Amino acid sequence: MSFIASLLPVAIYIFVVYELDSFSLLSVKRLLLLVGAGMGAALVCFGLFWLLDTFIPVSVSDFLYPLLEEVVKAIPLFLLASRKKIVFFIDSVICGAAVGGGFSILENIFYLVLGEPLGIGTVLFRGLEVALIHMGCSAIVAAGLMFAVRLAERRKGNLPIKRNDTLMSIFLLVIAPVLHILHNTLHFNPVLQFVFILAALAGLLVWTYQYDGDMIHRWLDRGLDKQVVLLQAIQRGELRDTKTGQFLMTVKESFPPEVFFDVICYVQLHVELSVASKSRFMMREAGIDMPLTDEQKQSYLEKYTEFMELEKRLGKSARMTVAPVVKFYPADRKALEDLMDECRN
Image (tube, rainbow, N blue to C red; front, side):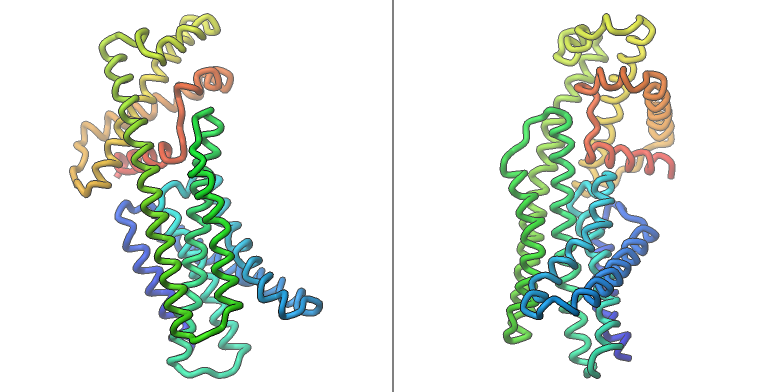
């Protein structure tokens, strides 16, 4: 019964967070894999602590161990972020909660097996507190990694980066282990401590959500507006009059005529798919459920297939040449993947 009681808060929390995923960004399979990754992180930490306990004093371990736990838990989240699998705030919350939840599951089991017997009430309260600190801190770390990847992509594309965006990423990556250390070192009334941690994590997540919303709207409003104008210019045969067209004219001599024609088609397909995917994202964000018609699905799939074929045919050097006008940031790729998944279903 104690095992069930210790796992119940984690199971409920993961279920609630997963239900928040109205965009279906994460499959059940990946969610379970992340929970397993969190349990693996707990095993790694258990082994590290067993080795370090022999020569690390308690006064140091209270500070060092929470930091190590957050670093180890961050490894699977870093791999996801670096592969552009965490690109929106809800991604970071779900992935971070899953990893942190898996970690807290195994940590609770360790305490039940190796610690002193505890009552059901204590087990439930401790299980909830452990789940809260691990899932909340991991979600904050995942959000920090998400911002870091976005900034790295903007830097690669030679786009301006706001100083506040960089500071936000650093702050999130630092504050999570700090909160975990405070939780482990400042021991006072358990209920007050729980309320403090809950308020701090909830406040950070709400603030991060609002900040992420601002970044998302900057991505949508500015990027979509420019791409719509560019698409209209292409459709009217006025590409030469745009900055994109002027850039393409400067590199025209670098390609044979047939390859340059492919470049123009490649740019046009990129713009059409970007506008379509961002428009669908905005509709989902606004809660508008307007299914695509079979004709639309077929059209988008054909354009995507042609786009991928052109990408292979052009080769790496040609794609690098036109990279300034054919940009795919993590959010763009995620929006396009969602559109293609919708078309295939």
